[in-house]
Every structure is written in C-alpha cells, then in structure tokens.
Length: 319
Image (spheres, rainbow, N blue to C red):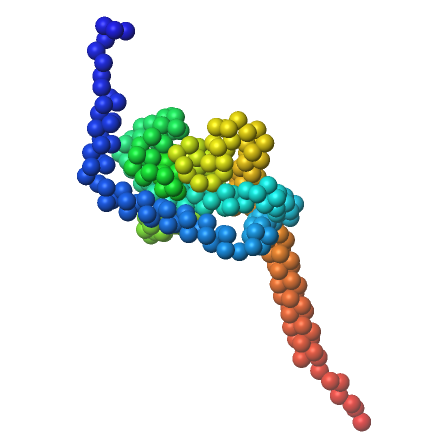
C-alpha cells in the first residue's frame, strides 16, 4: 500500500515516552522506589520465616476458606517448590502478584462503582478498557522498562495496567445487576447513596466483584511471568532464562511452580466469593452454632424446670 501516506503514530508514541523521561524523572524514580520497596519488602517478610512454616500457614488458610483436601494440596505443592529450589522465586512472584492486585483493585473498584452510577463515566471508561484488554501483553513491557529500568517496578506497573480491566468491568456489572426494587426500597426508607451502596449494592454484588478479583489475580500472575523478559525477579525470570538456554528441565519445574501458585490463588479467591460448606472455617462455625443452640435449649429447659418448681404448691396437711 505504498500509495497510502504513512501516519507516524509510532513516532508520536516515542515522543511521548521521551517527554516523560525528560521532564518527569523524579516522579518515575519515586514510583519505582515505592514498588520496589513494597514488593521487595513483602518478599523479605515471606523469606523471614522458615519455608515449612509459611507453607503450613498458607495451607491452613486454604483449608479454612475452601477445604481440608485443598489445604493439603497447597501445602504439598509449596513443599514441592522448596524441593525444586524455587522457593525464593515463588515468594517473589507471589509478592508481585499481591502488590499489583491490591493496587489494581484500589484503583479499579472505585472506577467500576463510578461507572455503574454514571453513564458518562461508563462511556468514557469502556473504550479505554477495551484497548487495555486487547493490546498484546508484551507491548506493555516496552515503555515500562524504559521508565523503570529493571527490578520489581516494571513488572508491577505493567501488571497493574494489564490486570485492572476485569476489576472495573465486573464491579460495574455487580452494581448494575442489583435488583432495582431493592435499591428503591432502601431509598424509600431514607437511605443515603453511600448507605445503599454499602448496605445493599456491595453485599448483593459481592460474588460478581469477587469474580473480578479472581480475574485480576489470574491476569496479574500471567503478566508477572511475562515480566521476566524485562528482568523482573521471580519465576518469570527463571522461565525466560530456561527459554534462552533451551533448558527443558528448568522450564518445566518453573512452570509447575507457576501452576501450583495459580491453582492456590484461583481456588482461594473463588472460595471467598462463594463460601463452601466443606471448608474448615465453615465446619468450625457450624459446631459453634450447634453448641450455642444447645446452650440456649438447655437454658430454656432449666427455666421451664424452675418455673414448674416455683408454680408447685406444697400440700397442706389436714388434722
């Protein structure tokens, strides 16, 4: 198509990147330092304890939220990553996912709420989200490595931008799908918009919101692995190193560790959105409720016995 004029969109994008690098270096350094400190500090915290203790705590969390068998699987999987010599990389990847997910949700959920309440905001946000979800993942890594060099920061920033879209979309969907009659009933009783949001829309839309959280986490995990191409630490760096050396063994082991981490995060967040009766927490709560009901029944029986005893009159003797 030589007869068509070339539109220099790439030149414009490069000009924007150069302008940011020239005029906002202090801001970029500050952002990089915050992300490096947060992800690096969380990794240090995980590595501060014995790996078996961390695996046991995460396994107990999985058993409490989902099921005992899932807790056993998580503990065994994390012990397997230790035996493969990938514990540090696994904790680095987990730290990046946690930091990126928290920031993406802190930004995305309020935007989703605004989009649900305002058609103007929804109209503006929707094409931006379409663009973020359709652009190839590797494209995100080109500008972030220019802005933030290597380390945790480029991986975290690229992950936030890549994973934020489902959090916004599913939060908006959760708020919009709440029954209008229920909202009108809350308004009829004098509820303020904040009270209706907090007491009606968010609780009823929680399963859908948690589905968005789950999608954010899964996208974050996939992106932090891709961030290994730009030097971000973790399992992604191990995978890219194995790719460059054509090392099938190391690549398989790192991939297996990623799968274990992905299953743990996916099932855990899914259980938060839809609690299961097979979880250890549900069983403990059930036993407590049964004990409380038994105590109430015993107290009621004692009160009936006391009332019967007080109502009885001693027989009078007739001389």
